[in-house]
Image 1 (cartoon, rainbow, N blue to C red):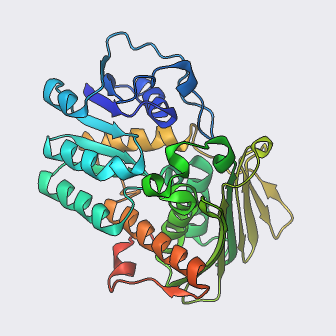
Image 2 (cartoon, rainbow, N blue to C red):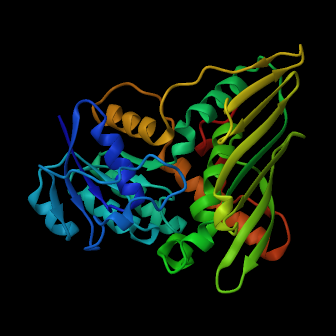
Length: 351
């Protein structure tokens, strides 16, 4: 039985709690949050997607307010880290050094230097470090990659991804809108699609981004073209300046030579495949959501099972690198080349 703790018990911590509770062979034995109100009703539903535990029964679960004390006191196998981004590196390194496997929420860190330190700690400890890029595990996105990779419908002509939210208005006065703690919209929200673009096509040669900022809030909306060595057009749009009634939207369209894939989170069916023969097919997808599937994958890895490397820490670091280039491009108004001589080799999931 895997003994698991959760560090941070807001919306995402509760989401991880739900997923771990439903997983056979694992038990949450401890949760830790420095906020004494973390278990209050008000912490239930702060995220974009439903599914986090609301009223939680923590019978048999030890509750800590001090992370170091939890590491000293609890016999643990693994830790889910769901605290603000600027705290990820220190917590991850401490847990790895204490001999725990770590699933750390995305983005892994605010910058490349801290992300590199996390990877070095994982290598030093010999433990698993997985970064929570849940979109790679999201059933419809995973199926889209499977279809694209198969080549059955020819090459990709164009692909567009969109992720829009009302985070800036709904989460005023929280760490999310403080770029010093969250990395801002590009690193907290838009990175989902940036990472999936990398997963689907490999590291782009360059990016060309345009952005819009709001007073005292930094970059609030971004549109990026990802440049590759062929003529496919790959775009992603992200923004969190929508008004609260808008809610949340994630979608994509992928135009192939003989078919079109499109996904809309709020539609039924969510994923459709339209073919040149005039068919509209609903591709079969795995059950569940990306949160549950990534935690199941993490658990299988730390049990030593032979599972594919859906996401590696090095790829999570590359997503940080691409976001840095996007922010630079949006600021300067010029395309930015993705640095690093081994960028393409480091991304092993390119088509």
